[in-house]
Length: 276
Length: 271
Image (cartoon, rainbow over all chains, first blue to last red):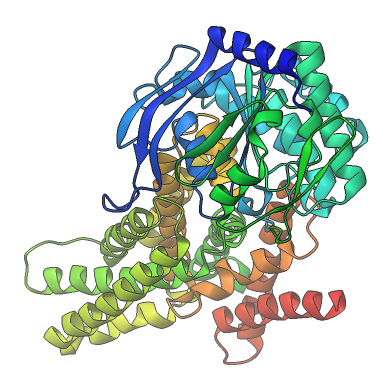
């Protein structure tokens, strides 16, 4: 059953868009378009997920949003700012959590350093760590439920704990938008559930706008306002109840995807392959 | 016996060892953190070519400068080209760039040395190095380079840490990663030249990589790795000097053997 009310709510929210993407294409080499003619809007306080097969351009899309890459054509606005023109200002309002496997395991860096690095980098080089920086960093670590890890080496933590620390780093900059790249990858189910709870609390308590890439949407499906099915182009975008259909999933993944419909009427895709 | 301790050449060797250990601790640790050992080999051999060119220019009366300065210029150029190749975090490209630059540097070094066969021993001396044959000018250059290395590490420690830990995250949090990547690479190349003068191009690895690699095994924090690296480099070097008094052996080689052994013992103990 599609709930008409929640779809309507999602559409109305979009009027106050904090992220607006218009006809954006991107190519790494100038020949092949990794992303083609992408347009969508995300409203304030929306919890949005982007899913698609490997190589569908998910990570590229969020790198464009935070100004790590520039679109070949088209225009992006984040809180009214253009990330291609002024990435620093956009990055100032965004808390970003990269994929965990892009992070070096070779440094005995402490959790406290990791949480503070983002916040202190925002303040610029040669800035001094003040008591309020420390307080905010500790508060962020408490918010994600692992204050006891403050003095531990990051590399000694489990995958789930590392993700929580990286989420705390993103929260410590007091962002208006959270952008997450696969926050659930290589994580056990209890850790996944606790990250979902934290993200949901951020949305409910702080009205945080969250955009996340997911490989497996099921852990967060019921909390989402918007879902994008991406495969180099936007196959479908809207409320998950509208988007998760056999037809759209087939179009996105290029093969039939088995689905299970739950009691609340949500269609849960069962994707076999998983990221390491 | 006590008289030996106050001889100028030994004093210079001890000062040089102290400076080498500081460079090993700062640049060595970050080289190991970033997995950039190959950069060290590349910079060392580029420095050899630069030093050989400086000697050629001096012999032909074109320009007179300490071969170490020539070495520093070439090592920094090598670092910049490696930094350029890895500017998007693609370390495999950097490895290839260093490999090619390594080949070009050694070809140039041999070419320059073949121009001045009668002075070739001066240039080849840098390949082996000798802690006991340092001049006051050498020490002064090593000291100035080390002060510059310390100053930049103190000022930009946080940025160096962030780009070494998480390049993509660093950029997303507003760090000018490309600038700090170049700077850190140049500092590592500078340390290579300081260490090269003391122990030679062949043994730069022994002092710049082995102590830091040993300290990083099971290291609990960045600061403890830096401090332990300093101690391993200093004590290995001191042991090298002491042994070289008793036996006609190269102090740099002994130091390298000890530092390397500490690493392997730690690896074996870890299982």
